[in-house]
Amino acid sequence: MPSFPEFVLLIALVMSLGSLSIDNLLPAFGPIQADFAISNPNDLQLLITAYMVPFAIMQLVYGPVSDVIGRRPTLMMGLAIYVVGGLIATFASSFAMLLIGRAVQGAGLASTRVLTVAIVRDRFAGREMARVMSITMMVFIIVPILAPASGSLLLLLGSWHWIFGTIVGVAVLVAAWFYTRMPETLHQEHRRSFSLGQIASAVRMTVSTRISIGYATGMGLMFGCLMSYIGSSQQIFETEVYGLGAWFPVAFGSIAMLMGLASFTNARLVRRLGMRRLSHIGICGFTLVAATQVAVALLFDGRPPLLLYASIFAINQFLFSLTMPNFNAMAMEPLGSIAGTASSFIGSYTTLVGAVLGFVIGRSFNGTVIPLSLGYLCLGAACLLVVLWTERGRLSIRGQTETRPEERLLKSAAE
Image 1 (cartoon, one colour):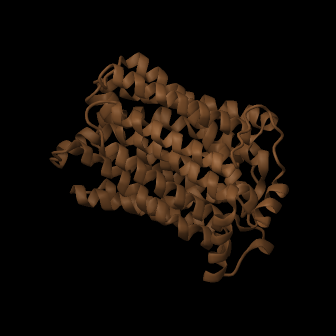
Image 2 (cartoon, rainbow, N blue to C red):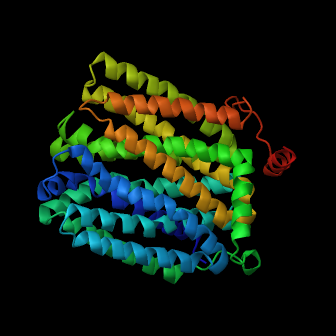
């Protein structure tokens, strides 16, 4: 069994393959558009959507499979599929072939979204799980800070094909490390025989547990914000709105750095203040700041000064990072006995919701920051309403004592 620091680092690296597969590609949008003569720049966002939709759907497969054969072999299978998709993308000779490669990549890497959460849940619960997820996210955030810059560097050395080839190499190295150092975390007594009835029962339990489905829905709405930002960031910062050009990785990385700082803050405070208080403060603040984003965007006709808008946006990304790890931990907390299938369903549900919402907002890009700002406000307000429904109108923002997990389970069962 790896030490705690190695465990966190390894889980973070496995998770970061997904971020690397998106953020590293952003500087290549322009060269890809030129190579394949794509007339509408918004069509390049299909490189994100083609990856995210299979990523969402295939999570429904990996969780139940991992409950039967274990976490380790399932993850190895997913990473192998990802490498195949990476090779297809590396040697793609058309935009359609590139999208196929992206889809195969997403189908394979869906295993990492499910199994990293399930592995952490196998070993930790409650606030400890939230702490581990926050530390993991802090390490994970390093990738968005560096990925666009590394993508730009690879473009200086060669073509956009080099980006996909490099990602394949990184995936092989991470898979080898995981296979060598990470033992199976699913104990034999917790393994389940493959049964559609048992899978359906686990899904029903997840959907009928108010805390789980409520915070999973909140995660999906917040993930929609993140996907809309990623889809639009290249057009906003690099080309059409602010024209930063080669300075785009600096802007993207600076915002990601604040998200990492938020994850560090969450990890330090979650034991003392609790998941609910931190995440509820985060979502309330997020919605208020999103309203400010909209006001500033409208005041300057969709093109506010870079420093002003980037500062407001960075504050909101900080608040965003106070919600997601805690929402995830709270959604999974009552579902330890079905962690694999539950993580599979929650991951698929939240990713699909986020990908669709992010695609809709991203496709609305009109050369200004107004669509992104309105998207943040609408999704933030909707998430706040969902949290209020989940907690029956109560928000833990003044230090209220959290209900213990077993009490929440009994309350949900009674309802």
